[in-house]
Amino acid sequence: MDEWVVSVEGEVRKPRTFGIEELLKFPLEERVYRMRCVEGWSMVIPWVGFEFNRLAKLVEPTGNAKFVEFITAVQPETMPGVRIPVLDWPYVEGLRLDEALHPLTLLTVGLYGELLPKQNGAPVRIVILHSDVPEDAPPDEQDTLLQAAAILFSAPLPKRCQAFS
Image 1 (cartoon, rainbow, N blue to C red):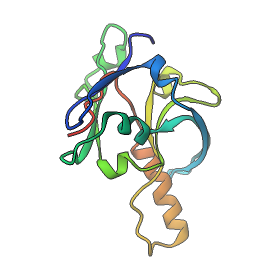
Image 2 (image 1 turned 90 degrees about the horizontal axis):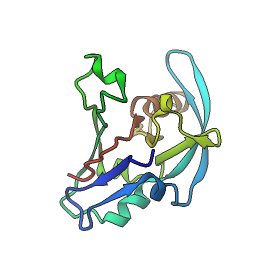
Image 3 (image 1 turned 90 degrees about the vertical axis):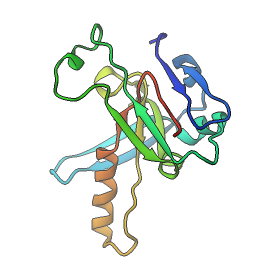
């Protein structure tokens, strides 16, 4: 994992690259979230990581920054799945800046007290545990919408992160 980095560039005052070892030095916390899917399954997941906004503060997004773009790594020699043309690689995901800086947007490095395994997005993964839920939505619908957002918008963080645009 030593070769993996998160590169933050774009509309930031202090662009920089973070190695995995550096990310593991952030104060890590465990947050336990119950995720329920409309398909009928649920999980309790103890994510280990830190608020993405802590990393963002170090690079200082400019007033022009409106979005955060995440671009996955594409390494066919070590990632055989990217050789299958199911998706147009690299996979790209984006968040509005306010979503990315929300305290419930986590840069996770582990779960269940261990480092993230490959099948869960190793070495780092962005987990979004919030959503824009209408305030007048019934409580059971709010819970369903929040949980669905946590599933739909959780995406592995890439080897390279073009962070602020």
